[in-house]
Image (cartoon, rainbow, N blue to C red; front, side):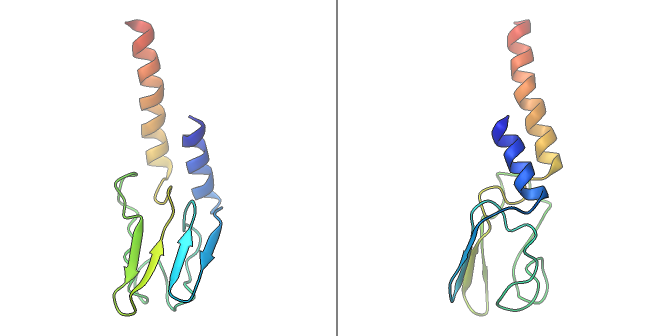
Length: 104
């Protein structure tokens, strides 16, 4: 449950250490909140050619994206795309297992 809380916390407040070099961007937890890329345009779709979707369910998200024109790679973080829907689903899963074990 602590990991579940931590994941939603870093995404909600956009807290993540990041490292950038000339051709790559790396975010440890999430790239949520970093909407303008140093390579031009928005990282949430459109101008820079980055693929970014918030409709995917964590952990079935693309953790790594690249700009098709310049071959710039970006690691979006291990908790990228973890929002309130995933938080609710995994909370029910965690407490559901505990509840079923108590009933059994």
